[in-house]
Image (cartoon, rainbow, N blue to C red; front, side, top):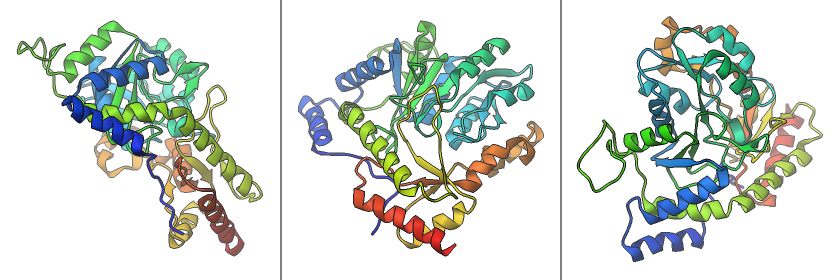
Length: 368
C-alpha cells in the first residue's frame, strides 16, 4: 500500500468557487481576496491583515514593516523551516539561533538571554507542528529587552494560546497556505497585526509603495506582493472546512496514539499546555528514527524527518563568524532531528492506511 506524506483535501467545492472568478472575469487580487481576508480576520480576531505570495515573503514583509534591516539581529529558534531565517536574511539583518524545548520543540526563551546584544531588535517565535510557543514567556522577554515580536504562525491557523489566536499576540503574525498547511491555497500567506501604523506600512510595501491600485503616485518604495482571486477562492472553501479538517486531524492523531501506545520505545510530540492543537504533523520520537523511516520507505510509506537544525545548514556557514554555532548550544534541536519522525496525517488518510502504517512500525520494532 502506498501512503503519501501529505495530500491536500480538495473537492468539487474548490473548483466551483474558482469557476466563479472566471464568470466574474476577475482573476487578480479583488473581491474574493477581500472576502477571504475578512473571514480570516474574523477567525483570528486581528484588526488588520494583508496577503503575501507565501509565508516566507510574509515574514519578510512583516520584518520590513517593523523597520528590521541591515545591522539588526533577530532571535529565531534553531528548530524551524529555513524560511523563518532566510526571511530575516532578506532584510539584511542577521538571524540569531536559539535552542528549543524537548517536549514540543518550541522556542526556549530561557536561553535567549545569552544571545541578546545591542543589535538585537526582534524575536521570532515559531509555532511548530500545529501548537503554540509559550507566548507569555516570549512577551515578557520582549518587553524586558524592548524587542518587536514577529510570530511565525505558518503552521498554526486555528490555534490559540490562552484563548488568543496565534499570530495576534505579538506585534505581527504570519500564516502560510502552502499545500501541506492546515488550509491551503497552493501558495500564499497572510499577515496580521493590531497596529494601524504597521498595517499601513505593510500595504505600502506589498503594493508598489501605494495604498490603492489605479494610481501612479508611489509614496514609498514598495513591491508586488499580491495574490490572485483564484487562490482566495480556494482559500474560502478551505477555511469553511477548517472545523472538519481539525476534527479529522485530531482523529488521526488519536488513532496513532491508540495503535502505537504499547511500543515503549516511542514517545509522541506534546502540544503546549496553554494552547490547543491542530496536528500539522503527527510526530513521534525514537532513537532509531532514521532507520525506521528507511524501513517505512521500503514499504512505500512516505515519512519526514523533523527539521534539520538551522545552525548546521550549509547556507548559514557565513554566520559562524558572528554567532555561537557550536552543537553545544542546540542539544534539543539536534535531538529532534535525530529522533523525530513525522507520520502521514492528512485529512483524507483512511483507517486502512493508518492500520497499515502502524503495522509496519510494529514490524520494524519486532525485527529491530
